Length: 200
Picture 1: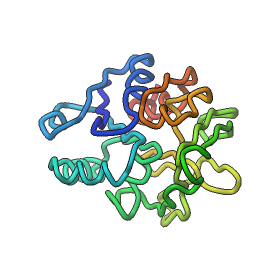
Picture 2 (picture 1 turned 30 degrees about the vertical axis):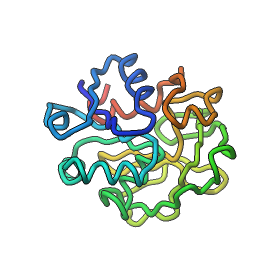
Picture 3 (picture 1 turned 135 degrees about the vertical axis):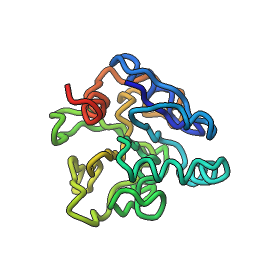
Picture 4 (picture 1 turned 60 degrees about the horizontal axis):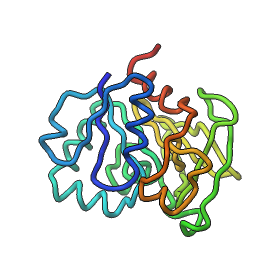
């Protein structure tokens, strides 16, 4: 299984490390020729969604990614990646998102929670996180909430989280937002994504 990881900006290395530990091959997408490689799925990592959207457009990646996801390519968007999938950005997922919903980076937090289809006590690291304000169609389903807010959802081939499942609680620091943390030792979310591609 070969997974493309958007590597323009933000926390992408930890996604690659977790996926590789699960036996998947990964490659980084930094320009259009990278995107044109064969792939079975796509990771849209955390970072700054405004920066990522600008770079996607400048590099000619925006429409190819939009078309691929709309055509069924499995995609997993975390934090900023969830924003990219929402109605005001790529528009492939029927969600309306509130950006920076939990406040500034230093106010970020860690918790655990239940996720439908994954289990209980799932680690959830929030960093300047959005949450889903509204699910816009019955095609999209909330699979996790925290304090009454939707923090994870699935719509067919698309999976999105407000938090960073690639990182553990000890990484809730400003440096982690820049992508310099260590990967989590709880691989259930990434295994769930891989099972969306090829059920085990």
